[in-house]
Length: 146
Image (cartoon, rainbow, N blue to C red):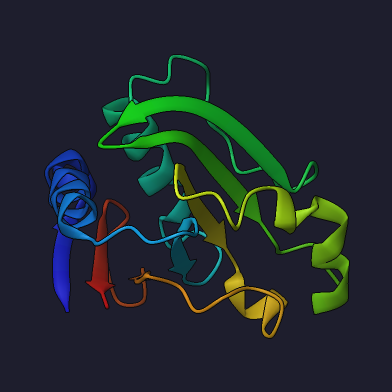
């Protein structure tokens, strides 16, 4: 488990980006599953990631719209798709996001919060990032990348 004070999150994000750089791209999108309880730091991680990608708009969890897409230019990735599956009541509802339009595109990086809500509908993630705030101070998190 990695202890990350939230002010140091940009350094952690850069390490994740270095791992993405080393990840062999195939013929599909690269998927990062962001796992953790409410308030564990998933959206804060996404904001730091967006900052590294030079996304200038405010990045919020797409809890109500379910999915946001951002143009990026990073190591062959041209689009970041941020999904928040929290409000999905069943994995079948994932189809409403038209995943075939982006899951087969190797230029897409998908970051999905609450991936456990779409089990069986989402391919196996390339990276799983577990966030926990349990037992941590307000501005600290345990983060594990698998």
